[in-house]
Length: 444
Ligand code: PFF
Image (cartoon, rainbow, N blue to C red):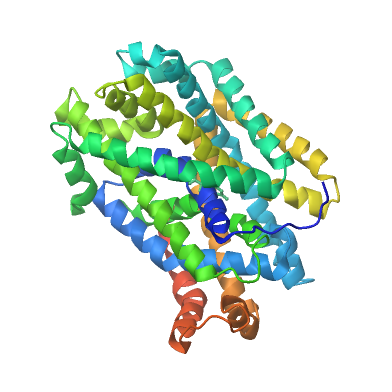
């Protein structure tokens, strides 16, 4: 394979690849457990605000940095700001990608395990779903085995080349997953007793406010949109000169948010409808944390005819959604090593694979370590990355260049008011708000 930078060809391919990175376990596994922990509707409201005010502007900024530099995350800062410390923002991004992979791969492994449980019919025979999930958590070897398999699968796609691997797989599985989520959401809402779950999801309860609410929501928004670590910089570097950044960012964010909300509409109504202890369901949801998806959903499948078929299809598509995200994460780290240290793409993939397996093994054995990686990446590293990326585009980059990139050298029309608002947001609003949320959240 030649090592020249390839570009995504079709427009649909661009959105599909970026959406493939964004839509993953963050939406279907992490969003519901964060929502439960954050008190339901209030968390969702703040989350939506974060997507709108930080998420979309930041995603546009990352695309811009990537396409302007046509380099990996760290190389991009180096190229656009030579001889300055800005390259550390890129390096932090690469490190963040690695930290995320260290626990994300474990959850990918759980998804594969559940796929095979569904396929073999054993999930169908389970009576206690909490116990079933705990059995997995307490068997390190089983977890490690699946985690390694998933890491190897990701590495295979990385090696098979950017266009073929990422673009094709995203285009096929995304619409399918979407369709299945809609079917499951309808089934969940039709369960008797589901209304309370919908209330929890859509009716804000001010008594639930926590000091970390804003930081939790912002971290989740960044994690879910794959921003704050330069993943979208790497993808932006593959965009062609006609790619409409703003439209792409809006489409990706809409899709990503829709999938997250759908996941909530699947999980909460069924959790409320299927619980045996209605009085403690909210506590259970919070305590369920990382297990929510793997405990509540099998219960929902059992309420459906041909449960085995639904469960198998769901966990298969979820694994694929996770795969397009792990590909993008691993791509960031691999391309960095490949381009910055001049190691062949093949060797750098092998190196990253080995390192991820090591980190994933520790997270499989130690729940506190798993949590540490999760919190460090989503609540500390991504917000810091996002803060510096907005400062970089808002203050450091030449305004003329920013406008030229945003408008594709003047071929796209934006009102001056819009362009000014965008810069104002990046210069003042986003950095100040993000810093305040960060400090306040960490203190809480
Ligand atoms: N956005 C992915 C998800 O929601 O599952 C996770 C992720 C992928 C985070 C890529 C960051 C990233 F760069």
